[in-house]
Length: 96
Image 1 (cartoon, rainbow, N blue to C red):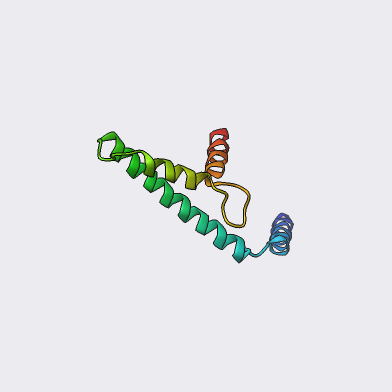
Image 2 (cartoon, rainbow, N blue to C red; image 1 turned 135 degrees about the vertical axis):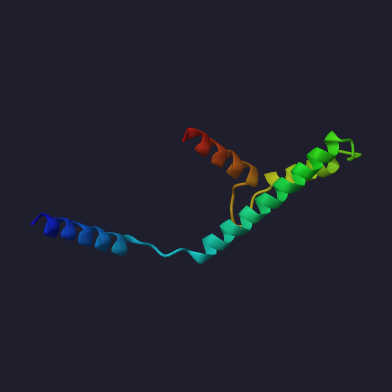
C-alpha cells in the first residue's frame, strides 16, 4: 500500500511539472546570450586597458573611458545597462 501511495505521489508530481513547464522564449534567450557576450567582451577590453595603464603601455585613458561609456549605455531593446546588470548580479550573488 505504501509503494502504491508513493508511486501515485510521484506520478502526480511529474504530471504537475509537465503541465507547468514553459518553453524557452527564443527571442529573450538570444538577447540574453548576445548581452552576455557583449558584457564578456567589454570586461576583457576593460581588463586589457587596465593592465596596459598599470604597466604604462597606455598613453591615454581614453580607451578605458570609452569602454566604460559603452558599459553604461542602455542595451538594445532594454532600458538597463550592462553596468546595472552586473551590479544587480553581484548584489544577488553576495546575498546568497
